[in-house]
Image (cartoon, rainbow, N blue to C red; front, side, top):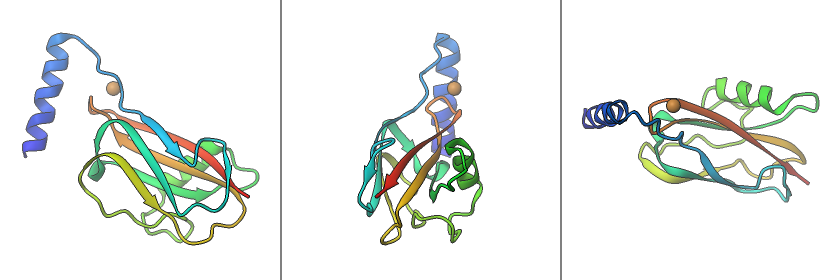
Length: 136
Ligand SMILES: [Cu+2]
């Protein structure tokens, strides 16, 4: 209730002031985009501003050899949180957070992985994005 009211006020202020607030973005990610790393135990995302985790979705999935990252990201986001094809463990946090650690299943095999996210931007719009890393 309080969240909804606060969000409404923010939206009204944005309308009144006529300013389009910038979209919330992923400011940094580990493993870094397009990096090659030893099997990581987690993915760490930092956001340009705190986000509501309860309204956000994160998925990490192996990228098929002939799969474009954008297609892999879309497919990963469409999966249920506990889908066996995902290599991330389900997230339980429902708080406001400026940083998120996504635990991964143990010992990822060599290959490319896509990290996909859909987060609720400060202005109420969903923002999707993805990043790819490779396990050597
Ligand atoms: Cu927007």
